Length: 266
Ligand code: S5P
Image 1 (cartoon, rainbow, N blue to C red):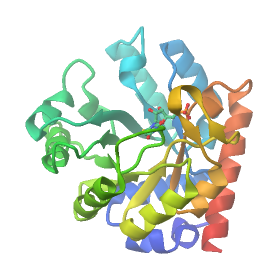
Image 2 (image 1 turned 180 degrees about the vertical axis):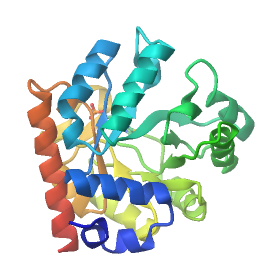
Image 3 (image 1 turned 45 degrees about the vertical axis):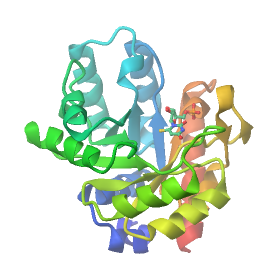
C-alpha cells in the first residue's frame, strides 16, 4: 500500500518533508501510534521499545523523566529508535522566548542533536518556532515543531480564541509540522481540523481504549474516534507502557488507528 493512496488529501497537501516521512512510516507499519515512552529508567525504556517498535510509528520522550540518564545510554536508545524507523519526538513543551528556547535545545540533554520533533506552546509568541529551528540548524540537522493548540487535561487554559490564534500563526510557518489536539473529545478535534485545513498534521494525546477520566485530570477518548475526527497520529502512553502485555496493547492501538484512517479516507 502506498502512503499517497492511504493518506489522500493529507499526503497531497502536506507542506513538510517530516509529515511525509511520518505518513510513509505509518503506512509501512499500518499504525498511526506515537508511543509516549513515559518510563523513568533506561532499562524500562529499552524493554518497552524492544517490545513495541514494530507497532508504532513515532517515539515520544520526556528526557527529563529518566533517573539514570546518561549521554551514552541515550545515544544507544536513539539508535535503536532510528533502526526501528521511528521519528523521535521530545515532548519538551518549550515556551520561552526564541533565543532561550534555542539554547534549551542544547544543554545537557542536547535535544537538537537527536530529536526530529519537539512540542512548543506559542504563549511567548511565534519566535519560539524560529528559535527551535535555529537550534536544529546550529547542528546541521532539520526538525519540525508541534504546537499545542489544545490540551487533553481537565481545566486547561487553552481557550478557543487562543487555539484559533495558535492555528492562524502555525499554519503559515514552514517549521511547524502541525498541532497537538485534544484526543479525548472528538467534537473539539473536529473543530480544530476545520480550523487547520489539510496541510498540517494533528497529533492527539488523551487517547485510550478505556475512555473517561484518567489520573490527575487526564481525560481519554477512543483511538478510532480521534482519527475519524481528524487526528493523524494518536499519542498513547499508559495504555501501552502500563499494560500487562505492552506488545499486544500496541498492536491493538495500531489496529484501531489504522482502521480509523482507512474509514476516514474510504
Ligand atoms: O494535552 C496534552 C499534551 C500532551 S503532549 N496531554 C498529554 O497527555 N500530553 C502527553 O501525552 C503527556 O505529556 C504524556 O506523555 C502523554 C499521555 O500519556 P497517557 O499515559 O495519558 O496516555
